[in-house]
Image (cartoon, rainbow, N blue to C red; front, side, top):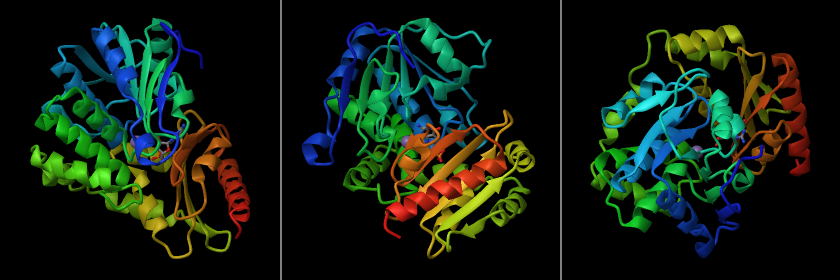
Length: 350
Ligand code: 5GP
Ligand code: MN
């Protein structure tokens, strides 16, 4: 999607994972902050912990710089994230909702306006420059006129933390809470292979800066609706082990998705137990949406690059965690996922 840019496209991206490439120049995105007064911060549909945490931290950074900032997402924030609203205002915009004034928009944890729902079209029509801060593979080729992209970073929130350091702005407790939420969301509470030395070093300074870790854990995981356990069982029970036990595929229809949204149950919870099954190389979760499309979430254990699989349907993400929107029926999506995973397993030599 083309985006009106005020000047040449300026990209800062890390190409490899050696130390100097780990820290791509931040100056272009900082120049963008410098040149504008009032910012609209947004991210992908159904914002997750990394997206919301990075928005929170950037909101407080921009305020510390004397700027105006508004967080406006395509969807409301889930109930489990409402602890963030103690210190940070979140808005969501449908097609007709008036937007605050802004002269620059920043996309966090994604790089395409098409992933920002109706709001994406409105941002494009506004003609303001779009900044992208993201850690997904290839995000420097998205809709940002200025990008700070580092696909070696575990979370988008970690990139915002680097901006604080670069500007010598101290982390306030609300900003630290945002970065911490980003880190735990995208590393599965420090369990995944992306939990690197930067993540653990940041975690230490964030806790020192006042993050209440148990408050975050309790808000996210200890306020479950009484019906959520039954729904968890039902969602898990849809899974099948295919391709000789190397693919775990779960398929959630519209009825289950509807009941999940009513009790704020996140069906992605089933990804982790499925990934822990011995012999499983790829987990695929197909969720039927109300518009007739299917959202697929993919997770890998070792060698299979699920980001490349998601790319078949125009999606993306990371090597070990990726997703896409599939414009087909649930049954067709399940069959297509099985076929692509089979191809990828064969290509990976097994
Ligand atoms: P999830 O399965 O949790 O929705 O997403 C896993 C990863 O893939 C996340 O980093 C997410 O941003 C990315 N992802 C999910 N869906 C899409 C999509 O439709 N397009 C792109 N480019 N990335 C996606
Ligand atoms: Mn992320």
